[in-house]
Length: 408
Image (tube, rainbow, N blue to C red; front, side, top):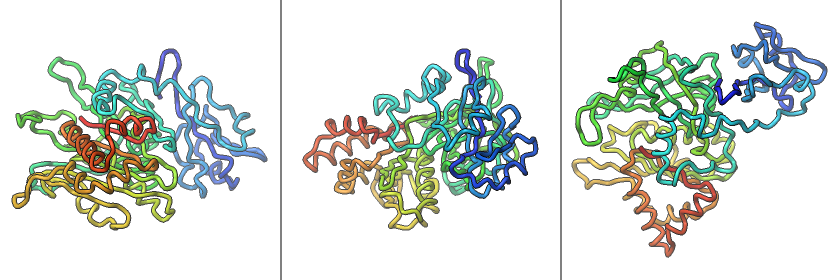
């Protein structure tokens, strides 16, 4: 729930009348008797439903698994729901406005998307994102159900795959969105630590399909970009979590760095280190739906110092070559010259240009700020080699919501 001005918002549990087969399973399993029906529809009483999700798993069709954001004082009435032939379109609310986002989150977002001139529009076929459902005053409380080290114990980088379960709290996310974590304790000035933002590394149906959980990719920070010792408050807090620990989470955030859904759409993904989180989410979404044969090409450029410091290296190597085209770049291999993602982009000049000029291809960059300029220069070289001009192409990509950059 989030407050904006005098309006307060909440999630309302709804049943899709187009999918519902009227089997009565939901009404029979609801412990608080929030579900009723007539000869036309099964409906949920907003005033009674406590979002316990007891009715979700038994539903044979998934018709019960829908939540819409509404003005809390004006939810859909039972009479309205009983009259529906299909679910109404999600209403456009003020919660997505810049004014409602906490100032520290807004500042980070502006920095992250500076390379594309600030937040851009999402792909035209992207799903509707929910944003700002939980605030710092009223966070969602998640339980840690997984904390796995992705890098070898001997590797210099401690990178973790952390799974957070939200239980009965609705926390819907799409691939490319971020959430905020509130570390406990106070900063040096005696104030609560500010929110830390992390990209979601799992697809929209959960780290485990149909579970109300999300995954994060977290690198423990012990030195800053200049190599000086520093303790990353958020990263060390998350990396030290134990199974069963509780975490205060806010958000979700992000309404533009989203993947397309239309058949035939392709993805070019460029990342370094923990910037792989949204790419992992998008790739896993496509992998789970591969049997539907709806997706286009996946081209990945993934950089790290050495293979041992590259998160998800093992699982990536097991993906079929006809599913994803992977191009690794390692900058600290003892027997090879330093190679960065921009070098691999230049190595694939023809393929990259073909995808840059394909209106069905969407380009995503995520990682440290230092990678951004190198990638842009590589794009410029790719275009020049093919008799084109990157500075003329980039505005076209942005106008069509085909270029998305988040670097820090």
